Length: 355
Ligand code: PMV
Image (cartoon, rainbow, N blue to C red; front, top):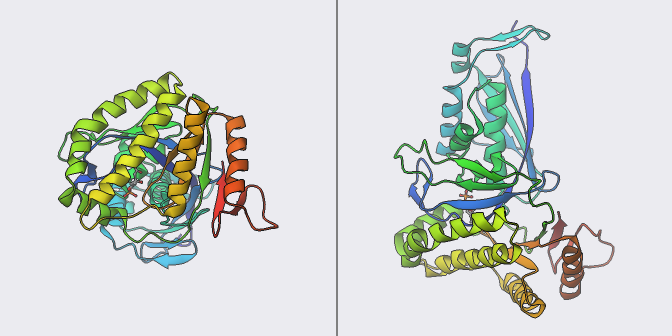
């Protein structure tokens, strides 16, 4: 029987780092120069949905992203596909009469269709959700027996930050020591129920694709920024411990101070890079000033901000009341045009997504 198709669909949310990963010590295996910590978003809003299918009638591995075919020839896709294929197991689906032997996977091809429900490559960690979902769905299709940690090490080879999206809640990517990367994996620090007072608001300042990819940016920072090396050796190890404690004890003031300071240091490293990299824009800077003023006048932090490799703001409010106040204030500072919805509207030329 040559005309069967076996499919798996999975959904993976993106994650936002509160202690940033920036810089690789091995570019092929994607091994970082420091540990990082992130929070995984609610799957409803910023996520990738991927369907993977296998059939004897497929002649090549192929992939479509947001409905457009993209090449799978890049090293990162190939590394993930190879790592998954070599761990594939037999699959028996009695109902459909499908029996795939372990060795069959070497000659069977897969088709992959992936959709992001948010702008791709605009500093909203689309590659994180994308590679995590790709690895997870292929692992299900090919019946891998590996645990989440081992899968995270495969997703890491697609995009570093993707390893953290395999878990919900708060996640640490341990940089590891091994040259082969086997101990550079993600671990869950706390699940999604642990600190559910927090509300994350993403202000999409621009949905344009970023000018400097994180790969190029990191390479240039590692080669030219003295601040990057100081940060990786002296600053991040202490911050990781402090952040773990803040998360464990629900200490919002410490959580917010560390998150903002780490975002600012990451962007300082970008400025310290030669040539300098500018990911934030004037709107991003206005949002920072506004949050800083609010936190100072309140006497204790109410909101944390963090920015990845793009101008979009990720704002973390200590609770729902603060979040709705912040949304009202953002609307006051960046009035939307008429006839827009409350949960998705525009900041200047820009929209806000509310978690
Ligand atoms: O995994 P990449 O190559 O998309 O790099 C992500 C880097 C940052 O988003 C800026 C920081 C992080 O830890 O996610």
